[in-house]
Amino acid sequence: MGVMTARDGAMHVARNRRAYTAKSGEQRVYESVLVRRTYRDGGKVRHETLANLSALPAEAVTAIEATLKGERLVPAARAVRITAAAPHGHVAAVHAAAVQLGLPALLGPAGRQRDLALALIISRVVKPGSKLSTLTWWADTTLGADLGVAGATADDIYAAMDWLGHRQDAIEARLAARHLAPAANPAKMALFDLSSSWMEGTHCPLAARGYSRDGKKGKLQIEYGLLTDPEGRPVAVRVFPGSTGDPSAFTAFTEIAAVVREKFGLAQMVMAGDRGMITSARIAALNQLEDGTARPAAEAYGWITALRAPAIRTLMADDGPLQLSLFDEQDLAEITSPDFPGERLIACRNPALAADRARKRQDLLAATEKLLAPILARVRAGRLTGAAGIGIEVGKVISRYKTGKHFEVTITDTTLAIRRRQDRIDAEAALDGFYVLRTPVPAHELDAAAVVTAYKNLKYVERDFRHIKSDDLDLRPVFHRLEERVKAHVLICMLACYLTWHLRKAWAPLTYTDQEPPAPDNPVTPARRSAAAQAKASHQHDQAGQPYRSFRGLLEHLATLTRNQVRYAGTEVTIAMLTEPTPAQRQAFELIGAPIPLTLK
Image (cartoon, rainbow, N blue to C red; front, top):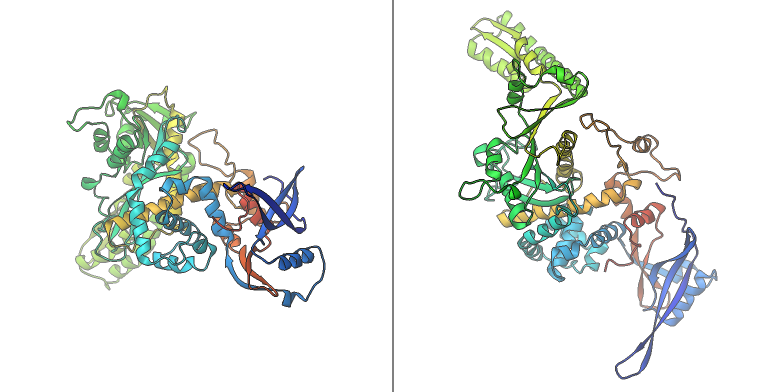
């Protein structure tokens, strides 16, 4: 982390005069009167504007100037009053980052709808909540006043969401040109994964019952697929019905591929997705034309995915191509199989993962046997009889840890016998730590290690889902009823995630984020934190004694930088003045390359 810049210079009044020649030829002079602090940054002298006094009467400016020079005019309690104060630093920092990223222009032409949409995105980063609670919150911060949205109504919010939703394709196309086009992404790599969130209410057409990744059984849900660049920077999102987990209805991958090809205009890409996302059926559909013929090679999309356990077991059976001897001196090996013509198979073995899975399996088996012991005792004592009743009790226990396949259960009306199926346990254990990746991308474009790295980079999409759903942006649950509003809500969360991605990266020196995670020598081995990140977690403070914070904690600290409305004795005019920034607040703005602004616009 760089050395903090010292900014302890005294405040002073600065008068700036600017000459202006009117069309009539008349010479006019405008004067702005500012409160500034001068400080030294290395060998340079810099100025920080704290307040604009231009609206005050001359005598008030004179009094302020005298006060700053150390003259004592009247008791402070009678000289000045703070008539209002509003949290400013957090919304100012996020807005400044949005401007640096060109987010306002990305959303569309300037106007009230864009200001409302931008305010919704910034609010989702700073204080996620329902749209109605956000309306109330705008009036409590400088965001509402500065973006002119403090008096907005619920209808205004919904109109802005509809406006933003209609611009989704244009917004995502510009993000794709920025992050997926060959100039920015020479590897032509994109990551895609699917997640779900539950709905409140029952009338949304997208709401359906399906596999809940949130563990919310009994709730209707939606599914949404997120497309990112290789570093996990969000580029596009698509919302699907909540029943999309059904393989017969699953179209997320092929639909997002069509979006990338047709709407983003990217003729060649390599799409990485997990084993449930990219199946053989979707691979076949990926590069087919509408008439069922194959696309020309110049327009074909590559992909990277992993095999499921049965396919790996087949490769290991008898004298198959996947044998343990391949891993005597290495952790990955490239193999081929007639079952996967035209594809490369990269087999990997992670010893640490193997040991962890073996431990977990033994723990689950032991926990199941512990719960089964009282049932066995009841049957032996005659307190539990009847095959049906015994079976119900046993089923409750075995289903709890999903270990039923590893036990052989024999039940009669008066007896119960349970033993481990060691053959099945051993067969599963043989796969511990193994995974096999498949791809048609030739080795001269992507070697085996690069294929492994690309697939493991799906962790970045999983991290984005954590940020979107819980850590930062609180997408769930979804309360909207109309299909287009649900899609607009998810789009707002995706754009907020895009903003958060850059803020987390910029603010890494102030948070526990690992600034420079070490690149592993072996792509198969688990990722490790850098020594600097471990020191952050251990010491909690930097060398200057400044505490490290979480991302959310830093935003909360920035909120303590308030903008106060100050009224001086003998005047009816109020001026806006910022509180003195802390070192962390100053550095937060420096890290995003922006001064601390008095107003957002």
